[in-house]
Length: 565
Image (cartoon, rainbow, N blue to C red):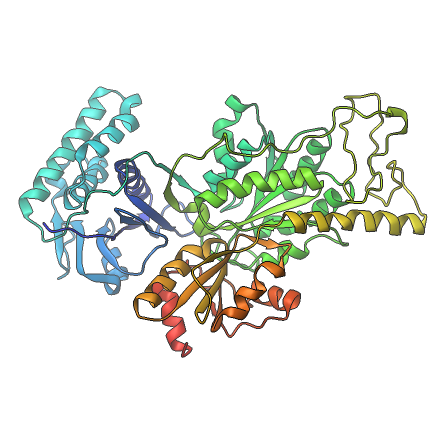
C-alpha cells in the first residue's frame, strides 16, 4: 500500500443502524493517534429510517473543511451506494455487506455473517475493515472498544475485540488497492470535540452557573454538555416549559447573581425576543447561543444555514446595545463563548453567539484549551460606599452602572422593566427617558472598543478577497489555497464578531483587494448588506448557499467559475 494525505470517509445508512457509533469510534481513534479531522453529520429529522451520513475528512497535518469527494464509502444500507456513487473519487473503495453486493463499484464485499456472531457486531467489523485500510495501529481502536464496553462486562469486550481482529485480518488478506494514511505529523495529545461542546466548555470556563432552555435542534447539545458537568461544577440547569420561560428565567437568575446562558435555534429564539428586550431594559447580563438551521418556520431542522444574523441583530423591541459573536472553529467556539459571557457581564446587556448545525455537530481535533491564560470575567460589586444612596442605574460616562446583587448588602437593588429613574423606580418623566436611553446606548461605544476585528489570512493587495463569517471559515481558507495553487492571488477575511463592526480595521483591507467576494450561507447576503450599510462597500460578487449543506472549497470555486470570477 502506498501513502495518501487527506482521506474522505463517508459512513451512510438509516437512522438507528449505528453509523454514528462507527463514525465517532473511528474519528476519536484518529484524533488520539494524532491526525487532524473534520466531521460532517448529515441526518434527517426522524428516529428510524431515512438516509444519514457521518463523514470524516482526515489528514496527517491539517484539514479545515469537508470535501465533496468520497474515498471510502461504508454502505450500511442498500441505497447508500446509489445516493453517493457520483461522489466517488478515482481511488474510491465501497465497503458493503456481501449479501447486498457492490453493484459494479470498486470495493470490498464484507462477509458480515461470517465475521460476526450476531448482527449487533457488524459495526465493530466495519471498524476493523476501516482500520486495516487506513493502516491505523489497532491499539487506538481496541483501547476505545475497552472503554466503551467495559461497563457491559469482559465477555462483551472480548467478543467485540475478536470481531475487530477478525475483520482486520480478513481485510489485509484481500490486498485491497487503497493507500495508507501516512503517520501523523504531530503528537496525539489532541481532544475531539464538536462545536457545541467547545461553546459549552468556554461558557463553563467563564463561570456560567445557570442554564435554562427548551430543547431545539441544533442548540440542545450545548446544554447537554453543560449537564454532563453540572454536578461537578455546581451548575443549575432548568428545562423550561417553553422558550419564553427559558429566557425570562435566565434574566431572573442573572438579576439574583447567576451567570446565565440560554441555548436555542432560530425558531425558539423568535419566542425569546421580548425577554431579550427585558434584559436590555433592566441591564442584566445574559448570554444567548443561537444555533442556526434553515427556516422559515420548522424549515430543515437538521440541516445548516447562516440566515439568522438579521434576526439576532434586530431582535427585541426598542433600541439597545448588543454584541454578536460568530465562531469559525473549535478554538473560537471556546474562546468566544468565554468572551461573550464576559462582555454580557461587563456591559450588562444581552450578548449572542451565532453558530449553526454544521459547526454545532462537527467533531474536530483541538489542542487542550489553556485555562490559565483566560482573562478574569467581570463580577458584580461586593459593596458601595453609600448603600442608602445606591442607584442601580446611575448615569455614567460609559453607560455602565455599578451593579450590586440584591440581598448581599444593605443597599436596595430596584429593578423595573418600565422606563425608570437612576434608582430604578418607574418614571413618566420624558427628560429622564432621554437621559436613560442615552446612558444605555453609550454602552455601544464600549462594546465597539472591545470588538474583535476580522482576521486576515494572506495579503489582500491585488488579490481576490474571500470574505466570510462563522463556520464558513474553513471552506474559504481551502478555496483561497486552491486559487493560489492555480497562480491567482487570493486571501480570506473572516469575521468572528459580526456586531458591532469596526470599519477602520477592515475597510482598508477591502480597498486593497482586486475583487471582493462575500461567502455566506443565506439567500440575501445579510453580512454583505450590513457591511454596505455601515461602510458603503459593495462586494463585487457573492457566493451563497442555502440548500442545507455546509460550504466546501469545491462549492466556492465552482460558483466563482460560474460567475466568471
